[in-house]
Image (cartoon, rainbow, N blue to C red; front, side):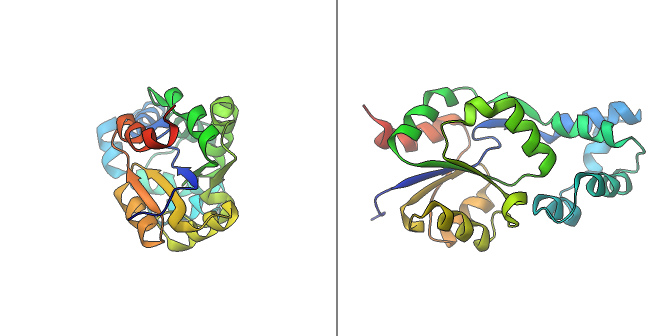
Length: 204
């Protein structure tokens, strides 16, 4: 039997905010004057991507790595504009559960992200995220999901036993990593999955 849930932890991308990197590569292709499908095939989350998300390299260094990977020569400002185009706004229906969930239990966000994206989502979606106690970012804590160290850091800061944290993420690797670290976890394929898991917690 699962332990009673004492805190909630949510991924940001595709749980709270719509994220689609094809929007990013399409914007870069427009700046570079090349085929967006070809650019998408060249793009991958490589070591530089992971270093960027751990805060080990800055935005400019990552954009330099992208020039080599993608074989395009656009400016840092153009990379940044495309980089932020990944955000498509709040997932439809999140307003149904954010405030009730945050009122029912201590609730937090944990995102694999980077300084540029963090600056963007805090500026543009700060009001939506306001009910959460803390938004943890991989670049801020120096650890990425699904690494055990990442979950250990976050639950320690939450001051809740891992087995009493219910975690939501759209990536199966992160859900598996959370469970390996002792958390309860839900794989989110749509907002309905989040709502279904939260109903026993936020019921009237």
